[in-house]
Length: 495
Image (cartoon, rainbow, N blue to C red; front, side):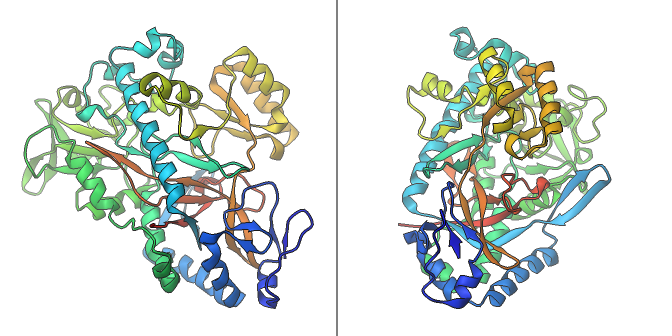
């Protein structure tokens, strides 16, 4: 049964369905599948009806087949821990998340608006600094940010677009409203899992996939390649593009290799590239080949050991000079991290208003800045109820979820916040939306978020899908794969 304030689901008197959904709970969270106990949302109704006709054992076999397919294809990621690194398959639930066309229109408009403002902000910060001079964003919030790159001062980038691949994370609140949880603007990951999820889940539910009229994501590699081509600093129809990876030991190496294959471009490491006369070349068996565009999956700190970290073995000596000279395009541009800092996140509504004179289409989650006295006191008084995040961390690290934390964890964070308040923000503990997931004994609700991928060269293009991330552990709010999360295929419906 599905429990909702002591209500039970009317499962159409189907014993196997009651058994399959016996632990499915509806509470204060927005449920992606159900309007009410036993009543599916219109766009989920066909999936619900099909689940009525499937034996729980059959559904389990389909889930096992998905996991086996991931293992057979080597679709993995690496988790780093105290005892070294562990390579794991990427956990994927075979029940899709379904988004109607009207909802997607709002997401597309909101993300496009947001990225337009972010790119205007980055251009301003590294050139005129009008937003700082006008007092909209504090100067120290920029200059003290560890991702601010003074080396980017005065550097012009193609189309004035700093963020070419954006992967902002969205959640739905208790009212079903989409909200931006955070922006990922440096080297956002996950697009490869969006693509492999689609291929595998489409095979698991072929008839239903056809009936739902799902918009395709298979063209992502082509769209990414065309966007990168538009960045080339040289005239010509056939620029040389490479994907720069840190190497096989990086947690996202599968994605790097997959996307390079999808685009048909070389996958290179720093040692494969060399600079000469402020130009970048790739070593090949036929000699040196000039490179025009680098899709980099290496963080700023490691990309050029001459300018940034001297101990880096991952980057290309002299790359920054070639970049400043305008002889190479890099996506995403260096220095974009200043805009996806979690403290700056709180200023995004003001940034959108400043540059576009518009109200945000997609709202932020309410955020308290510990760098401000009022926000600091509010956070310290309510640590047990809030989510606290270190501003420069990602992947679920440097985070406290107050309601699920022990007293010792709370006190440790209290000390850390007092020692360095500017390094932390706090947000309400959101009971964000949940969707159906296959578990050992049937189907249960699990919290989900959404990472769509927005490409921006000459124009912006949102891929109609994305990576729905899932908190696989019951009650967990952490969707990051490195912290035990998984994913779903995301079906955006056509009109």
